[in-house]
Length: 201
Image 1 (tube, rainbow, N blue to C red):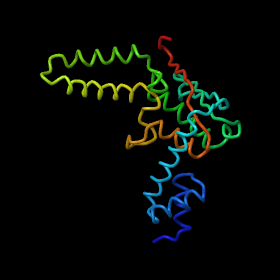
Image 2 (image 1 turned 120 degrees about the vertical axis):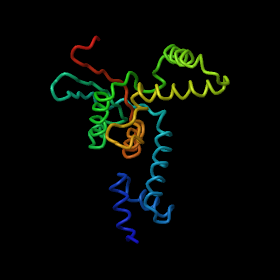
Image 3 (image 1 turned 90 degrees about the horizontal axis):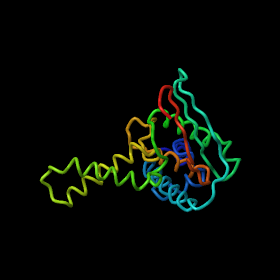
């Protein structure tokens, strides 16, 4: 088995967590690296949830222009202090979010930003698609909700599969939460605009 110092270093490299947090995670999981990563993620998400009510009034507005200059993105990502806005982790997140918007073309930041009328319209469309199915109403409801989840996963930035994870298991929300945990501040994607040459505004 690797020495505890080696394990701490590897855990830090893989998670970006502090030395004391890594030691605690390894102690709690009896030196199991994968379990320690999961432990840190859960701890980070719990801490991120505690910070959700805090105001994030600092941050940056960043631009991404895709090679060929036919596609561009403006995005505002907020945090609590100017200090965090200048960190490498925050700057990398902003770049990644801008590239995600360019590549995946979301319509909303999060599911809470989708107007209720749009959600209802989607539900009606899915119900109409299933009208000729001879299934019980509760099964139809489950199918409709499943299709709605897929809609959120395609149209909401934070719900989308992160473009840099080929496995498709990481959502953009997970990446934002990771930076939230790493910086110890509330980090939030506020808004964005995507411009493509030839597209109607």
